Length: 479
Image (cartoon, rainbow, N blue to C red; front, side, top):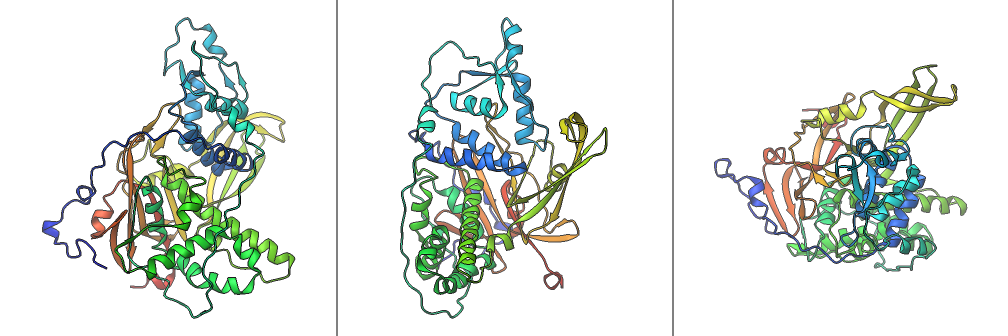
């Protein structure tokens, strides 16, 4: 395969940012009703807790943005600010009951100060989640964006059955993924940038290139057919490694994901990455439950082994010192940016002790002030860090400031080396994702179809959105 810019002289080096084409404003896509997707996210949000619950809430607010709906539901200003701090900053203090009563005493409330406006879908969610009210609507009519959601709650999903070719050769294959671009016809850069980062993780790809073929021969076909995301990712790797072209078009995996990520809309790369890994994790866990019933040996969970870490949340009542401890698994750590200049500060802010003013102490049986201490008690092999650059409540905006990130990263006496980053260029309304990844000790920029050899120093100057770090073992640390 021909790689552009294979030999780059330092003195002639053009800024990587200038190599990325300037994308024109994209025409707003036709609104696509995604009732089943939102229902699925609401169900996941109800089951989740801690940081994962926040992430689902952020995804829901993003999905509720409807270009055809009107923002006419009023949300009291101080509550909106507390909610924003809870959702997008490193705050664990809940905003409390949604109280719009202070608006009744204002003769001329000021927009974006005394109150903020949201659409009906957002309001219904906030009222259901945080109770309170009362409902306050500006004087014009809107169509309900939520009615179709409630009507669709009991719909079942159609089965999407796809077959892959039988493999009988169980000799281990090279787990390296060939350098290859990914063709983009519409708004698939969010998917391409996340996938190119995964292609840099040899252990992850080895599971699909080698281990999954052996698993197929050991389990009933009906169980293997249920592992759709695993099968489609394996098929994608085989498609890339068997192709002789500079780029390929993703087939089965893209078609499968369209159920959740409409091709008519732009999407978030971190949301897709979580969907990819969570789906694979769920499929392997479900497989192991079935294998336990029919008394076949459980299979390793590659997502659990490589990407899952554990956070310990400890809350201490200031009045009686009663301590509550909750452990929470994570796939990514989402870090606030507003007060940070570098990644180390983002992590320190995430882990710093925090005061909670509305904590219900079980021992005191009333609300008390408390301290919350967060600690990572199990670091994963691959640490996925997500920088919260996008805000969707109460107003939409993007934080474009460059947050410097180190290589190596030292965290709790563990050394991590950067393996890939995802970058977002543009605004909330119109943007483009591309990524940088390390393959065979060299750095490349992956921009849809284009693959370019680059210098590591240019990678470290990027305004990263997602960063992937690999933990170094003792052998890797030797000079």
